[in-house]
Image (tube, rainbow, N blue to C red; front, side, top):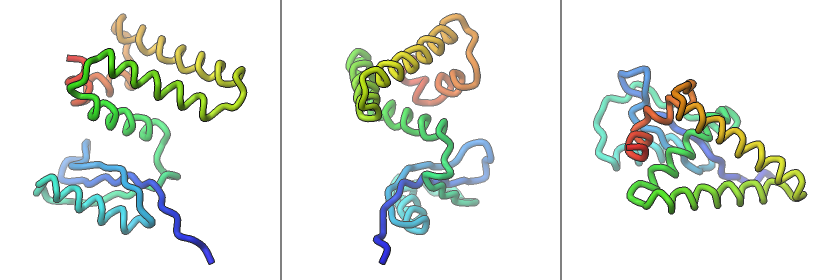
Length: 151
């Protein structure tokens, strides 16, 4: 007999606009149907009344890594609003350190991953300062959360 296991689902509720969902949320449930029901409940709890055209439920297998990262960034940034920027930076670096440490048992491998992450971050920072942003940078800066955090 198989045991039911809860999974992460990302639910996008779409309205008339095709370029941006009305609402999106990540939920931990046992099925896509439960994820849909949970997301609709959260949508209604926020007081939204827009007409829903469709609901898209993505399981962890179908969510692109970039989308997962963007969703986590948005959640972290949203939770960080109102905090001092030095505290946000400290929390972010501690998350990165913990993530690397948990993913890699050997110090050499962990340090290589750390160097890779810091190198990618350095390149993104350089692109933003010299104005040579690509689509990844533009999405962050143009996002509502990016506007509130960056100023």
